[in-house]
Length: 331
Image (cartoon, rainbow, N blue to C red; front, side, top):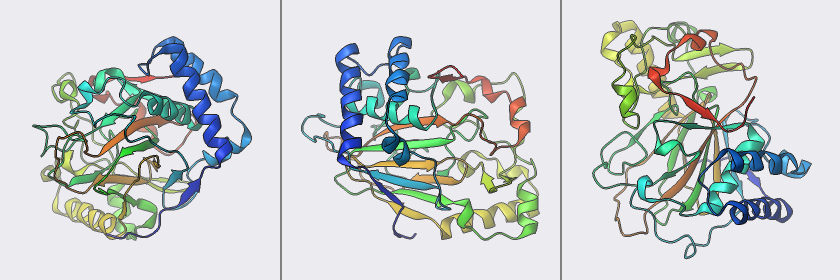
């Protein structure tokens, strides 16, 4: 795995102040980061007033890396309090940072939440949790979180994934690999752009895992667009044993290529990683959680970008295993 430099966008002091002041206004007005229609409406109005300099920093991902890191924000380690024991107990911990991410997400597109995940909040807390150490979810710690497309099972998944670092004393790395960096044969691309296997709901979606109304739809792992290949990938929840040997071999070569081009991004407090969820699979290296209030703590937001053409039209007919995504702002 490479530790090559990740594209960085350095926020200037004026942009940081603009974001901070807007988030502080929201917190003073609502007293919480828990979203309501009124708060979301206010977020949208504030975001519309941001200047061109701020919008330039938050322009779309524009390199084959499929990601970038925003620098310039800071986190008061003492002020945010201890790392929550789980998302369920986090409440308004680090609320000002929730609102910063919500504002950023609104500049970049339309933030989404899930009815079946973290009580429908638009900004999630990603922390290690006792009893979940070996799961393939953000609450795990002891195992490698396998490279995957965020919410790959669902046609309404985010176009952009935003991870804001609150605490990372151990330098635990997020892994990332762009499909645009891989080298695949035409034959493999032809196979993998065919809908052969489903991607099943992950362990963060218990209700979706129990969905039985319709059969899981087969979906392609790759999709060819005018701008290049995109992907939809989650091997931990893809039943590869149902495919023939030729398809499994091509899928294995895709996995090998993603591993070859994978980079490690160790975020520092205040840094924000923006990942194009159609180009990049992400994961996390294993670590030993202490559960003493000092463990790694990220904030996560998911964003749809209206009008994007990076996915097969057939996705519009998928059932999504009964899960509904909530949009922050009406189209």
